[in-house]
Image 1 (cartoon, rainbow, N blue to C red):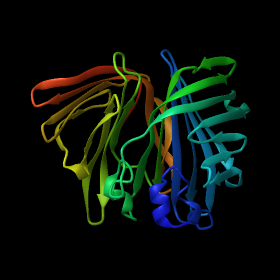
Image 2: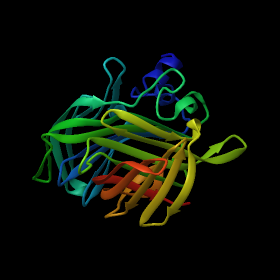
Image 3: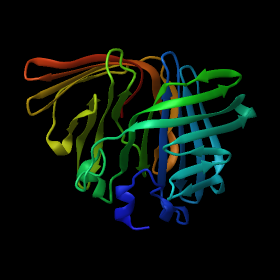
Length: 317
């Protein structure tokens, strides 16, 4: 599989060459599903740490999280059409099927969700995804791709005999791959805005890059199909970065545009993140937080709205 083809189709499994090696590696997809009251995210993936090779599915709800281990042979993938399977579970850009029973965690979860009306970010050859030209750099510690900023989600998930109905719900899909998550970062994503048809994500992270490091910015706001990107590679500037364990207040500037993001942490639950391919770092994510996003052009407010059921991670060194 040619590297350029994979870069142009980042939803595909990027790590096929690592399966038969002992090089440290991870790859994970993130499927977030919300309705007006509730939400659930699924993170299927693999991790390789020397001779230790595993597949996994992480699950996070409004009030609980789970890590389900699988052997690497349970991981299957297809390039055309794109899908991945782990055990009896199926994931693609069009649908997911969940079938998990883990007695050790008192977890039984099953169901199906179909996705439609996909909203994608704008891309071109130089910017094949949200990382822009950094997508072509071969030695990045962690790569990130947005596969779907917003879609319609329809279906049911039964978790321990509690049914979550996602008919006319909202989905979001992204992924990460490499060897390690950044040692410090913030990530926030929301598309349940109260008064508008908008979708939003931001990540600001410590990025090691050869002999030095920098604070990398990727941020996208889509309002009624009009896209506003604020990123390191398009010369966005970080004007304000006020972040503690429970909240963030960030101001970005690009040209005449100012973007303010304010979010408060709510009910963070433990997930596992990779360090040198091993899922050994505890991070805490909320999918029940809120975010206020305000976009100005010069001094004029052109967008301001609040998203509920947003995802939020604040990770310090």
